[in-house]
Image (cartoon, rainbow, N blue to C red; front, top):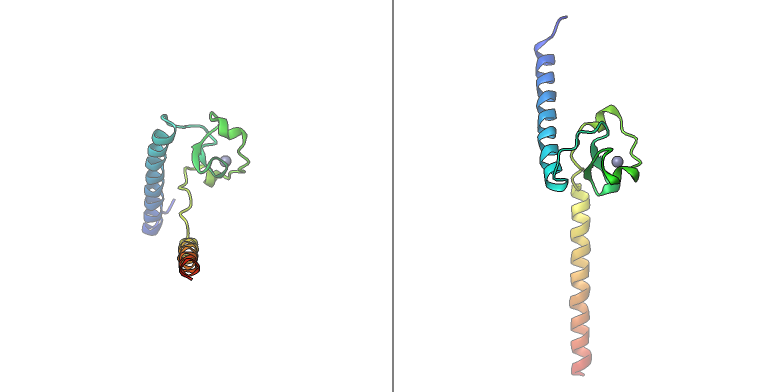
Length: 112
Ligand SMILES: [Zn+2]
């Protein structure tokens, strides 16, 4: 079998990513479960608020994930996207503005 340097590097980085994912999985299992989940169906489950879940957990009864071989590998929950963050910031600003306007109106009404 001929293996190019690129393939070796590719394999190395995949292995590394997998090790990082597994290390995170161990940390999250210890933090949220107090034990390491090693089941075949282990994954971060969206129906369990992205907690680590495998077939030994109660939450797995509610789980409707159809996991592919890839997704079954411990994956990090998706980070909120930039758009989502900006959206929330805007909502917060709007609410703050509404409060300020209400207070100003209330003062005007009271003063005459
Ligand atoms: Zn699930």
